[in-house]
Picture (cartoon, helix red, strand yellow):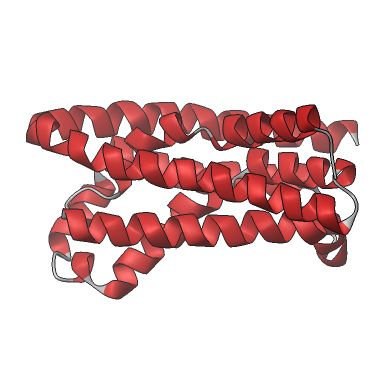
Length: 209
């Protein structure tokens, strides 16, 4: 079993890289137009998918990437590009317009599943940072018992993220239409900057390698 300080450090690392408070406003933005029940479905599904992905990388992360010949910097670049597309839609309200044109589809099971899987579960919760941290921590938590502890730490981090999503839904009622529009554009700009940073870090790491 790993030491208590190692477990605590791993928990802090996972929590910081997932960044639940930072994901709360993004969750509100990408689930705009959904009611409480639909947002709960998205929260549950996104949390489950993210946990499965991170747990898989905790158990066999290095092996998975090596099988496909994928490096972490390349994963970071790809995740950044995908995030930038979402940010572009948020800033210019393309996502909102598309939801208005397909109001009936917006509440279907397929739509809820799609949003939960991308961009919430991947790459926002289980993003390049969280996956990178998980793979690095798996090197320290090397035996079976230690890997089980690491999976438990990931579960705790994802559970906290789920609780943040549930609380974030209540804030939406106080914003109103104007507040949501302003918040969506502001968060889109922040997300675009984050996406550029992901790409820049990935490109730099690829060049250095």
